[in-house]
Length: 169
Image 1 (cartoon, rainbow, N blue to C red):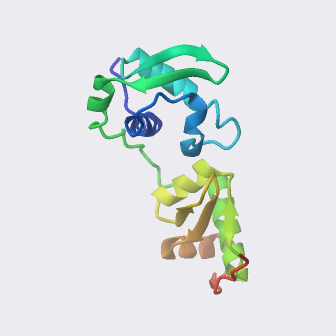
Image 2: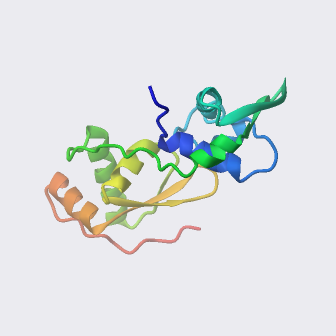
């Protein structure tokens, strides 16, 4: 079976390619697509990339874990684009809830900043229903697009009017 370049594998290779020193799995916490267990998120991905000979272990295992570095084959693999995920037209219940919650926050003028539901919000962003502004750490600022406002209005059964956002900083 050929090696499939996924979005997460491509992100790990890209981060490795940008560094001169070997990285540990916890060094990938800022690009993790999960909230809990971010330090361990990259470990299985790094092992898969090692099997495909895109990365190699560097040095002895320490208290921080095993360090990895990118190989020349890994640098060449960066030219591969991640496989596109086939998306159905349906929205899951979690996506419905995230759209409704975002609409409710925006109607009141409150900013919606969260560090959870990352994969749900990214799926909504891929469908052009929300925009996500990444913040330091794992925080993200979520806003509805016009298409998202229309979809949220349809789900809520009333017209969503987006109020000016209050600045609480």
